[in-house]
Length: 213
Image (cartoon, rainbow, N blue to C red; front, side, top):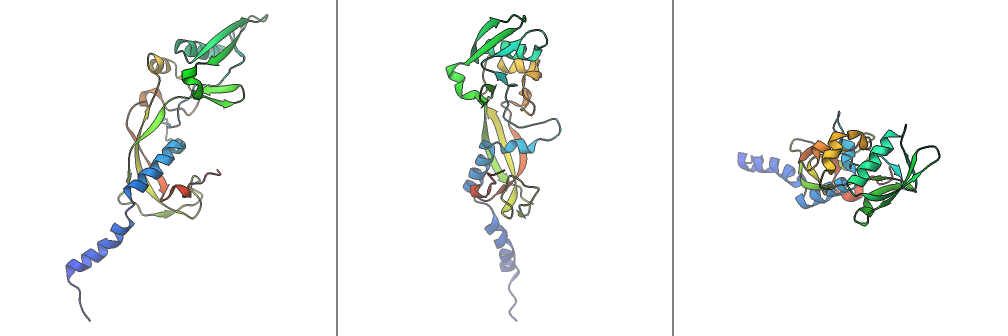
């Protein structure tokens, strides 16, 4: 039997690993899709969350403020102070103010929700880099990866990102002073603009994300 030299044997051993290494361009495309479609919310841990930040929702046609309606009143004040919308106040017989909110043109697309009940959401996640976790073996997606189509191949990926495009002025400081203005699960103000890294299980193709969940 012919015995191969040690060097060729080493090359043969390394070849499968080299062949399995994800294409950087494809990896970036998959990671970008994950970031753009809100996948970072799945990486919440402890007190740190990564969902796109939004204010608590308000009724655009009639938000009652005053008396027991403390939070709506603070939200209206914050909206007015940061020019997120124009407001019209109408005194009600009950003593409360009924506030109508009209989103300012510059922020029209930031008001998200159903019907009249909307939240002001802000910022955009930017992908800084995506890297395969070197010692992680590929897995077959199952119940523990609901964002993936069951049965597809996936791999642990290190994603570095930051939240950009946050309104300026006193906007961030106002949220730091009163975090109750933010909807539950929103990214904390201290993390805005910082480079953060999470590890996510990503497929090899965008088509392998589960868009029906």
